[in-house]
Amino acid sequence: MKTHKGAAKRLMVTGTGKIKHYHSGHNHRLEVKSTKARRRLRKSTILTPVHEKAVRQLIPYK
Image 1 (cartoon, rainbow, N blue to C red):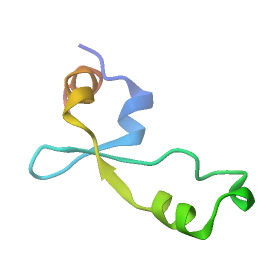
Image 2 (image 1 turned 90 degrees about the vertical axis):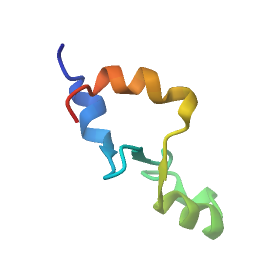
Image 3 (image 1 turned 180 degrees about the vertical axis):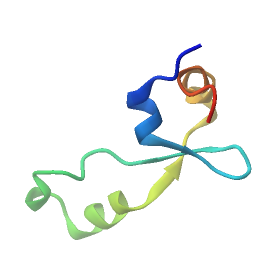
């Protein structure tokens, strides 16, 4: 099974096996977003269990 390279570049697997990703919307048009919103977008977050099964198929060897 091949790894989906686009997903592999964007997703990380933690030591406990959870999938970590960064928020979208932090590249341009930042002037219309509040400081609080921009600060919230900086942090990475854990992928929800709803999407985890589909994502694991994209990155089977990570």
